Image (tube, rainbow, N blue to C red; front, top):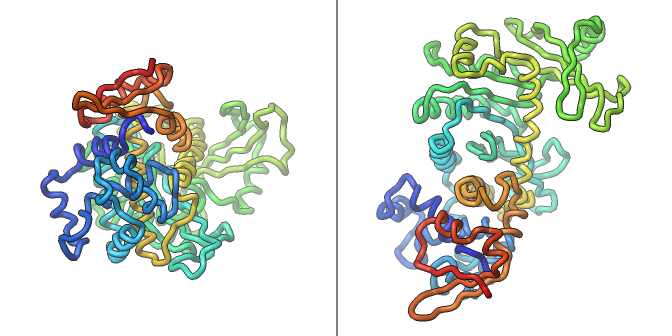
Length: 456
């Protein structure tokens, strides 16, 4: 058994910190139910979130097993007749088929603003990328199309801030990463929300070469109307064109500088570059890997070459604002290269999300049902990351993946007894001290009064 119920954890994050009063939440979701019979919408949402956090069974039929498990129902503070079956859950997702992306994205935006006020960052670094969900073995599923990884599946566009996935657009697999204006609309929406609901802080947007587009580069400076200034910095990996590589090869070795990045050694050089379709020159940094972690030098054909484009240091007003906020170090080339390398940490969010519940596969045939499942997954993962930072920060490293979290914090033996009208949770003495159960229970919210003791 677990040291505290999933419901207590979710109640702390969803119900006590929600943007809707408790009495109004059922009214807000009433359109999803055709009648008053059956389970409430809040019950469905609670059990779906617990399904993602649990992670012991990713199939829809797992809801039938949980429905027959009285102990699991008690942990959610439910009776067995309040537990949803797999058919009920499928019907619930079917009702969400016609709900568009923007409603789910609004919930993610609310959660993002909440975390900004909790963590109070002086700089905000966003990472934009697409993630492939591999449904290659699926038969006749809507939206399952060939992706750039030569697998059939979905390819949603996602924006992350640190460990949090703060915005996403669910898309079929054949939609490339820089499709249409998805990037510009998403970043513009987030930036305006930060300025309105948080404060005017420096914002840096990281992206890979798939988003190398003059339209995207011009967007952070001005979008739509001329007076609508976003004042955003961008760092984008560039494509390796033949003429650019020839130009770099002709440069004198004295023009290059050395940079130690971890156990690796890099050489880099700065210059201004303008492609044929670009109206102006942009700051470009070329980096090449000299030696790997083992210290061995690399031949020219084995080196990793990267072109980086950025507008940092190109605008006097933006530069003054960055320096005023304490970000003078970001003007240097080595810091820009370091930020570009940090995109790898952003991609670790994709691994964490896939490990959290999907294993890259979505369960339904209809595109709208899979879209709802995907956004519920994002919301649950966001709350999971917030919970690690608000509650379990002294017990489990905040960088731990879902499997580590579950094995250490959820999967250990305990015993619940009832005596004198009280419930007592008995836990092994070593485990009680190791996980600091008393503090975890207090931080998890305000559950029913339960005395926590140790097994002697």
